[in-house]
Length: 357
Image 1: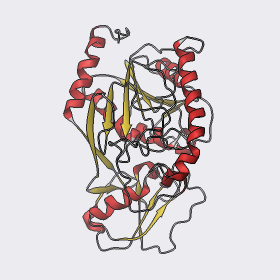
Image 2 (image 1 turned 45 degrees about the vertical axis):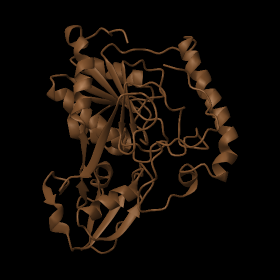
Image 3 (image 1 turned 180 degrees about the vertical axis):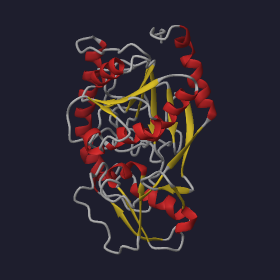
Image 4 (image 1 turned 60 degrees about the vertical axis):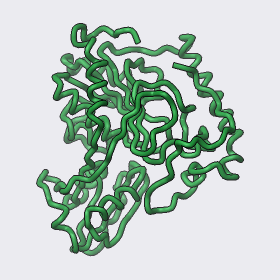
């Protein structure tokens, strides 16, 4: 893959998608949407950041810094923009597909936002505060082995030791975590695309784009570059889930008082999708991504229905078991899974060998 470098002050790429959501962005998120005066003021700092990114990548290329491969094929699902891009739903869909194809996948993650700092297994009943909300959701949704650790290779070693039958690893996030050698890379973009196309802190990019990856999955306009790209669609399920797993049709909640809370990267999008399902939201509450809810106070009206995302539910249910979680359903182009299966075919004959790229 090509080395990363600073971005020149070129015109805004035509493939940049407009920002979405009903709430106006604030702070850096607003700056990152266009190449306005504030973005240009920060642009010199992005040159410094880009130079450091390029230096780090070259140190790995020269093997001054070394990558380690855990053995089985490794698929990294990540992004190049700061903030949420919808990686976790993609990981869940990918793991379920691999399971349906007869693979025995395991998932590794850093476990962002957790209160612990060790390497540990994530079980379906693991407290989200100890393992991270996204790994907890993946474990509950897939029942695949999931391990978290500050270094992904540490998580991979522990997972393989505990589950020696695992024959493929999916890394949730980690596109820039070059210490973990990988075989396939999937880059996910939300509907905001590349924003203003600048590197941090002048824009949302963690590294210059385009850069080579195996596939791009995008919710909005196809981003720039020649990588094979596939559109993805996100929509809410027609039902919500209770803490005990029972389903509640969303149609039954229409007309009643509903308080929607979301501690995700794009809360306005969740609220808009709820309204599209016909719910009249009495109130909405957008909280910081990965918020732990320990000090959160629910509305005083006991008759109001509390609705959240599945990601939030893993933290809310222990505190407020009456909360309803609305699953996010992901629709991926079948051609993507066909391309994935074709690329994985060589490992069927030799599971622990890595075919040449």
